[in-house]
Structures are given as structure tokens and as C-alpha cells.
Image 1 (cartoon, rainbow, N blue to C red):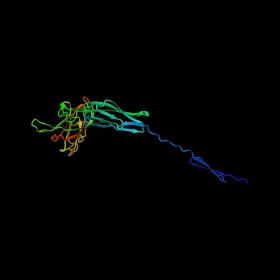
Image 2 (cartoon, one colour):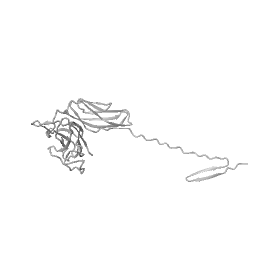
Image 3 (spheres, rainbow, N blue to C red):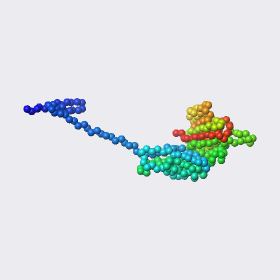
Image 4 (tube, rainbow, N blue to C red):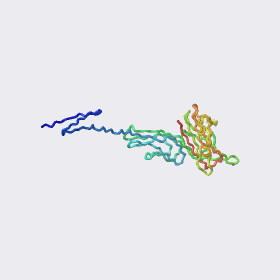
Length: 279
């Protein structure tokens, strides 16, 4: 007697399968899984350091250039252009070191690249300005202002002078800054701890010594329409002064005047002068 195999079609949403009775069975084949491999981002390198730097004549100097590396292999770094005499570049740690033997402004280009992939490369131009060492020059009036290129950080100290009578007078430090016409520049004078606390004051003047009126301060952030003079950023904290200046479209040269509000003019009064361009 033949066994009658009965099959019943079972319908489902979007699917159909057949169930067979009478000792029969059912089978189905699952579709193969699709495996998507993650896309690897392309290798890249970059230069993180952006600042212009200052060195002093015949004084030890050390400056590090920071880089980034994302997946690049066999990375090499190099410097082309003009380094100050006495300064050498070490590619193993991307540092400039030595003691400069000549004053002036020196421009060079730092390059980082992958020897395995010619397309993976980055470069940036830097400037080192070598100044005469502390105590060798005076910059306590407009005519003797220290020339600087914008923008940089400089560590300085008030070097007091005496009046004809021998009574110590407050020092006046002047820096003649060259930038691009129309630039907006942030400037900080930060007094460092000393025997007598430094109360820094910042003033921005034009090349004729007239106080400019194109500044804004933290206290009155209403645009670049304030007189360019600031004593304290925060009341009671006397070491820090801050101004943001917008240069006129006709000139990119201005003068930063730093002084001690207390007029004590002590040689241990150190401060940092910090400048950077605003967007």
C-alpha cells in the first residue's frame, strides 16, 4: 500500500514554505551573510605647532615642534630655509637647539612626510627672531622699542633705570610690533611672582606714541572701540593685563607699552608678553 504524502502550503507574510506529512521533512537554505569590512581612514600627518618664537643672542635655546601622525609609516622630518647661526635641528625629536650667534629674523620650513607614501606630507613655515640678550639693550622709550614680528611669546623683565638724582624710577618697556593691516591681535602681559609683586599695565600706542582707540577689554566686550589701556583683568589680581587690538586698514605697525603700575622698577620683576592673532 502506497503511503500518501500530503503537503500543505503554509503562507506567511512575504514568505512561503511547504510542510509535508507522512514521514516527509522540510528543509530551507539561509541566505549567506554579507560581511562589510570597515573602511580604513587614509593615513595623514600634520604639524601642530604654530607659534613664532624668540631666542636671545648667545643664550641657550631649545624649541620643540609638535606633529601628528595617523597611520603613516616610515615618517621623516626635515627643515629647509634659514636657521639662526648656532641653532641646529634634530629630526629624532623635532627640536631646535643651540645658542644663536647672530641677531635677526630667520624663516624656515618644517616638513613631515611618509617615505612609503609620497601623498602623505605636511609642512609649515616658522620664524625665529633672535634678540640681543637681556640687559644688553634698553627699550624704555618709544625710540628704542624692541622690534618684534607678530605673533609670539616673550619672557622679559623690567630693567630699572635711575633719574639724575639717583632715585629709582618706574621702567617703561616698549615693543614695536609688525603685523598685517587690519589684523585683530590678543595681547597679555602676565607678571610673574617676584620679591615685590608686579602690577602690570598694558597700553597700545601708534608709532607716534598716541594711545590707540581700537581695542576691547574683558571688562567691556562691546567691540573694538575702547581706549587701548588695561591694568587688571580681574579686580584684585594685579599681575595680569589684557587687550585685544584691531589694527587700522592703513597700517600694520603698532607699539606695545608695558609698565609696572606701582612704579617700583625692580630688576626681579619678570613678566611674559603673549600675542596671538584672533580670527
